[in-house]
Image (cartoon, rainbow, N blue to C red; front, side, top):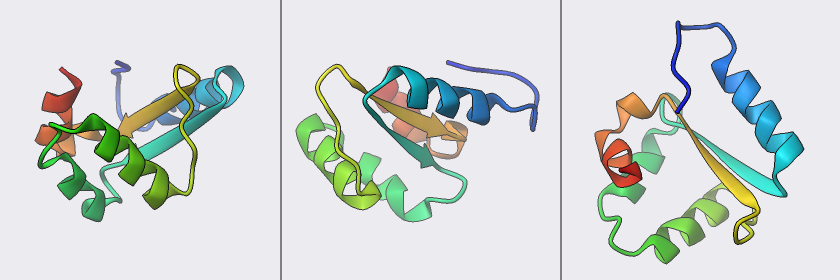
Length: 84
């Protein structure tokens, strides 16, 4: 969890970290991705969720080698709940 003041580069730092340290990553920006929010209506099947993320973001997730970044997650309470 990265917290801090607005517009200081948190997202940029996290994305650069993902680019350098992981084989792949997906950045889900809830401020821009209103259509992505429905993915979190039912998180009982995480394999389905990961598959949908891969399809919608044209990215491949690798077991223990990929990172999913939720930016502006406060805009999607269901995603925040799923993280817990």
